[in-house]
Structure formats: structure tokens, C-alpha cells
Image 1 (cartoon, rainbow, N blue to C red):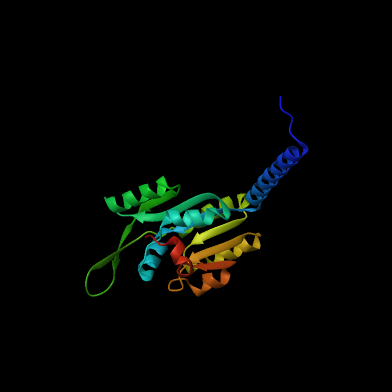
Image 2 (spheres, rainbow, N blue to C red; image 1 turned 30 degrees about the vertical axis):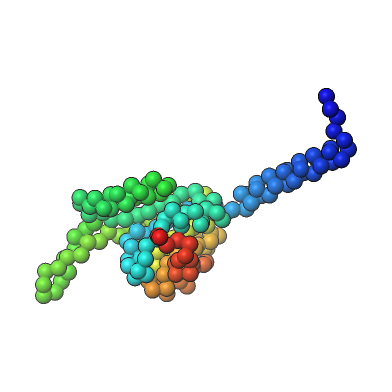
Length: 198
């Protein structure tokens, strides 16, 4: 068997040290990632996208966040009309890329006035709030995709419990109450190039 020269042995040791150091850095980087869960208020974000004039690519959103965070769960809450095949396909797409989706039937609500008009609505504030409170001991931070002021009280309580709360919304749709309550607000307009569906 050939013996390695001292120079060869030295080079071999340097390579091993570099590999070891690189592995340690990877482990440390992974350990440093914040454990988070993401909660998407589907109706609010749908309205936000209409105001923005462009659509989120949720796969790009996930890739962007998961490069920096340990995302334990992605949750999407939305009301669904009966026989809405388009929404059914959309939810199937979300499931395929790793989202857990939560639905309930949209309520048909009559609007008072001269003409008989109806709107469809399904409010998930209670469900989102309950799920976050049940999860809060398992995570370091909470990410909410919504601009709804109804989350102001929840956000305050989460911060009092030591959690960081990051809100993703638009300057066009975020309520001032939620803006002031959040630990951090990230405006979708500022990261459009990284999350817009192409």
C-alpha cells in the first residue's frame, strides 16, 4: 500500500477540517432558524391581490421564507361556494405544495337597500385565533397574512407572551391598528419581484 507524503497528509487534513467546519456551520444555521407557523387569511389576501393588481405565487413565497425560517406549518383559511370548481382546484394546488387548507361554506347575506342584493362571506378570525393560541407554545414566532384589524388584540397577547408576530400585507389594505400592533410588517409591494406569479 502506498504511503501518503507529509504534504499529501497535510492537504488531506485541511480538506477534512473544511468539511467539518462547513458541516458545523450548516447545523448552526439550521439551529438558528426561528420556528414559525404561517396563517393565511384567504379572503383578506384575495382582496389584497385585487387591490395590488397581481397574484402571489405561493410556491415562491414558501421558498423565500423557508430559506430563513423553520416553517412548521402553512395554513390557508377560506370560505368556499357550493360547486366552485375553480376554488377546489386552487385548494388542491395549495395542498400539493405543502399547505394545510381549512374551509367552510360561504354565507349568502342580503344587503339592505332599494335593490335586492347579496354578498357572500365567511369569517375565519375565530378559527385562526384559536389555532394560533393552541400552537403558541411550540413556536418562536407567528406569521399572519392579513391586514384585518380584528387580529390586533390577538397580536398584542402573543407579544405579551414573548412571541414575535410578523404581518404580511399591503400598504393599500392593512389596518392601522394591526400595523401598530405587529412586531414587524412586511409589505408585499416591497418583495413583489420575489413572490409575484410570473
